[in-house]
Structures are given as structure tokens and as C-alpha cells.
Image 1 (cartoon, rainbow, N blue to C red):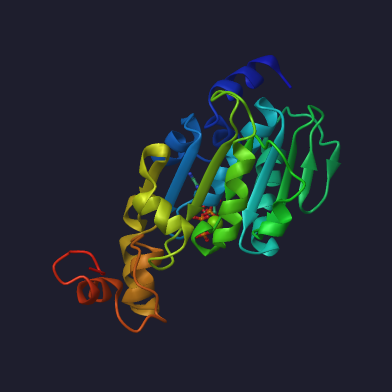
Image 2 (spheres, rainbow, N blue to C red):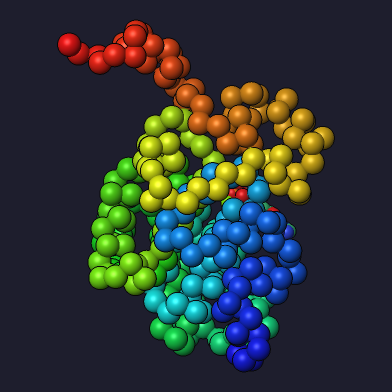
Length: 253
Ligand SMILES: Nc1ncnc2c1ncn2[C@@H]1O[C@H](COP(=O)(O)OP(=O)(O)OP(=O)(O)O)[C@@H](O)[C@H]1O
Ligand SMILES: [Mg+2]
């Protein structure tokens, strides 16, 4: 690796985008430059959220040697994210050849490993002290996955030593661990919300067409990032809450 390129990239993860011929959107640069150990990204379809965390994974593997774990609801999806990781890595002009590379795993000479896994609790076993955990399409992953991942980050002794966790998604109903953390998780998380209107690559004309095509319910979740009640639910959550707690008081007296 050239010293100058190496140094610039170490200092600014956003330069990994530049090397791949892309200019990061301001929110992408902010996410990449953040040093917050816990991040929730609630972003529209096609806004560039997976590319952002792929760059983060590359940066972490190069400059914070250790384990990087990529999760998504299904292996197919985490493999897709892994493809973005390897494509970005390949676009960097002066990085070392991986010592091992498969469809789901890359190992670098500095000992870093990036591994793509399906989002089940069972697959988390056997891994310890990751430097970075990424959960893509997080609202669609099981509560058991989140429960299994949290302790993995607590295994290091100091705050500075702690691994990072970045969870990205579009909303998927008003339930599940991601919804709970987004709404009620407090300030342990840094939150970034990017609707389709905030993405310079999505035009208003295209959005208007898409709204007609997918309908209001899906559009509000997928493009406006609203946690809307699930289609399966017969009554909206607010109505149920009103009915069971008429004066905002306790349910049981
Ligand atoms: N800053 C950028 N400049 C140019 N192109 C970008 C930028 N960020 C992302 N892209 C491109 O936009 C497309 C969508 O990116 P990406 O797959 O990361 O989005 P996403 O939000 O994860 O989408 P999905 O909702 O389908 O999962 C890709 O072709 C990606 O290369
Ligand atoms: Mg994606």
C-alpha cells in the first residue's frame, strides 16, 4: 500500500468511495466518519445504505484489524453485501491481495476477516470480539439475532476497545428489535434517517411513478422510512392502544 494513500484512507473512510469513482452523499460521508460505536441507519430503498456499510467494512478490515461480521435475514442477502465489499476493495489501487477469498469470506494479510452470514442466532456461535458487526435489512432479522449479537460486543474491557455495530434497514412494521431500538433505544445509538427525497439519485418523477405502482402502504415504509403497521394486522397499533388504554392510564388496575 502506498504510504500517502494509506494515510489518507486511514484518516478518512469516505475516500474509499472516491477510489471507487463515487462521491459520497453528505450523510454517507457522515456515517463513514462517525466514530460512534452503535449506529442505526433508517434509509430509503436504493439510497446507498449497503454501499456505505460495505465501505465501512473495508475500512475496518484495513485499519482496525480483526473480525468483521456481515449479517442479513438470509445468506443470499449478506452474500450480496459481501459482493459490494469485495468490489470496493478491488477498486482500491494499492491494497494487499487477500490471503483467502471465497463468496462469503475474505481474509487479509493483517489478519482481518470479513465474513457474510445469515441472520440466525445459531450462526453467531463460535465468533468472538468482532471489531465491526453489520446487520443489513435489520428490521427483518429475528429478535434472537440481536439478543445473540449484543453480548459479543461486550467482551472487551474498555470503551475504546469495543467493537462497533451498524444496523441498516427500511422499516418493516411497528415491531421487532430494530423498531424498539429506533423508537425507544435511547442515546446509546446514533441514528441516521434518509428518505428517498434526501437521495440525489432518486428523482421526484421516478418516485411519483413508484408510489402509484407499489401503493401508499409500501411507499411510506420503503421510501419515506415510516414505521407503518404491518399489512397482516387487522387494526392499526394506535387504535389498539387507544382501545385498551382510553385515558392513557394503565391497562390493569
Ligand atoms: N454516493 C454514491 N454515488 C453514486 N452511486 C451510489 C452512491 N451510493 C450508492 N450508489 C449506487 O446506488 C445503488 C444503490 O446502492 P445500495 O445498493 O448501496 O443501496 P441500498 O439502499 O442498500 O438499496 P436496497 O434498498 O436495494 O438495499 C448502487 O448501484 C450503488 O452503487
Ligand atoms: Mg441494500
